[in-house]
Image 1: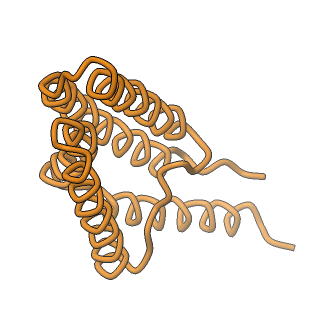
Image 2 (image 1 turned 180 degrees about the vertical axis):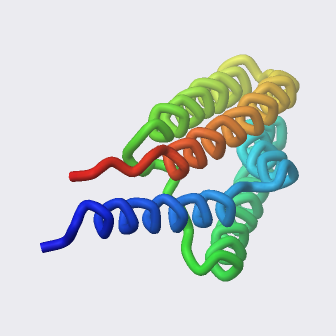
Length: 151
């Protein structure tokens, strides 16, 4: 049986470990911009020809995978954006906005022959994805630094 002092020490140790993890996973501002560029670039890619769109999307996917590998190598792990908790609604909102903006750009290109709206929608996606990334990261850090409760 452990004493209440041992239990309190264990909870404090868990709190310190979670705070260290939160500090390690705090993204610098430029990483939020990179995420925004990737998401905005996917939407803006609809401004290109059909073949150009596929090439741009392929490049963005490769860059996204490279970013994943770099983060995993740098930290030793990668935090899934769709994890449970207060971050999931932010990730789903970013995905929902992306789907609406990308679909709108694709529709305007395919059925109305308009390519330029994709650039405007891509810029909107860039701003929203950059902001959403920062919000996601702040919520993750808040979860990690929240008090650890006894079972």
